[in-house]
Each structure stands twice: as structure tokens, then as C-alpha cells.
Length: 62
Image (cartoon, rainbow, N blue to C red; front, top):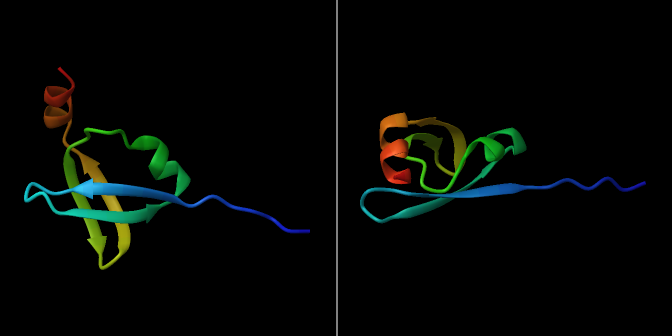
């Protein structure tokens, strides 16, 4: 019996315009939305976390 799994990738864009694609788990993927702004934590190519800046995210959605 073969069991499949899904990999989730998110592309983050920095103020400089540089982009970085990182693999995240499904629960993190479901919490992120296009246009979110905040502080990304990563080590090399390893995603460590993202803290949303609610004031920036709300401003961008208007």
C-alpha cells in the first residue's frame, strides 16, 4: 500500500523585491493569505514561522 502526501510551498516577497519559496506544513499554509505582511523567520531554506502584522495586512486589503 502506497500512501501519498501533499507538500505546500509559499513564496515570500521582501521589501527589496527579492523572493523566497519555502515549504510549509499544511496547517501553516492554511493560515497564510496573499497580501499578508509581517515578520518571516527562516534558516537557509527551512521555514521557522511567520508573524502577521495585522496593521499592514488590514491596510493592504482596503
